[in-house]
Length: 305
Image (cartoon, rainbow, N blue to C red; front, side, top):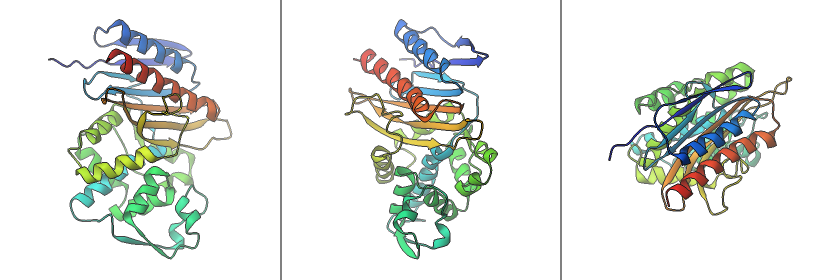
């Protein structure tokens, strides 16, 4: 059976939308795209969306070529790069890493620092990695970056997987120094779909590493009102959020969630939603993501029965 790539791109300018369809679509797909159009049009910002049914490859993309700031979403590719080193025997999840007080910056989100405020503690790589992915620990993130030799090595690993339209160049600490630095860590929606698809296939990481990362993403308590917000409570979602601060003009640079949703039939959809430069409050930004996730879930849960 020939698989077709179907995409839709929305270019929003002064409240108007121009729509390009790359291939004929069914009435059900048109309904999905129309629903997403309506949601995106009310988002008060620049919205990137990527949806891919991972078994049929059916794909919908919004703002395909826009470079969206990832914020903590980049901890997902960082974790893949760490686990690649584990698979190669250069690192071990059981190895202990000494953390000093200097490693635990005070003005950042860090459950590790909250648990070990004075540092001077040895923690397994597994614990640091889980804290970084599941709890989005910013100090853990930068400890992992240092372990791998910096963001450039993480970016090189991801590019070598064939995922090119992504930039990972700044650490969490570097991003915290100036508003504009966060925009240097960017990703196009299609690129993140590629990476999620690679992860789901389980061919680039070992099964044990894939299972470890998937569990951290499924167990993550962050962003409960984003992708998971309007889905059935039984839905399994392996995801990674990313959130920026809000500037003095009430603009939030990034309010993101990306992940893999398991459908009732056991198949999967990869979902990427970037809400960028939005003036909505947190509730409104989260609702945009939740509504898009529900539209995608409902479409595939019904149409694939």
